[in-house]
Length: 117
Image 1 (cartoon, rainbow, N blue to C red):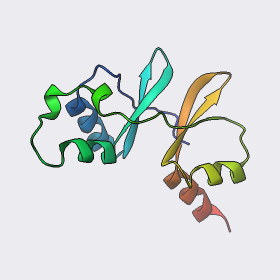
Image 2: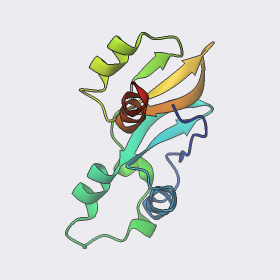
Image 3: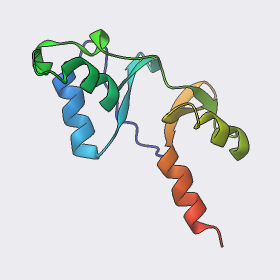
Image 4: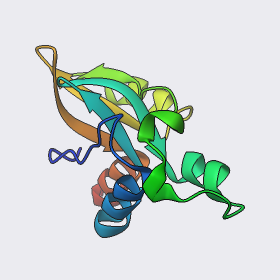
């Protein structure tokens, strides 16, 4: 799990979201408002919206291209359930006492598997 959560708001430009994803080598970002997840912007949603080069990402708001929120799980969720959920989602938001405290991606599980002896 990554505890430092990079995110955008629905009113940010898509260009800002792309910049954050590029800078931190991320495939998706949660869209947060008031500490709660309201959507996700991903490489897939950006490419689907701008792949033809007709629109300028600086002039489009995240809310116009965002997808549904990433699933939210509790910090103590069993790894088997987490693994199953990641079959259907690129990442999961992790909560503790109702507050988002991290993000868990498929790559995090792979790192843990590599450590198993």
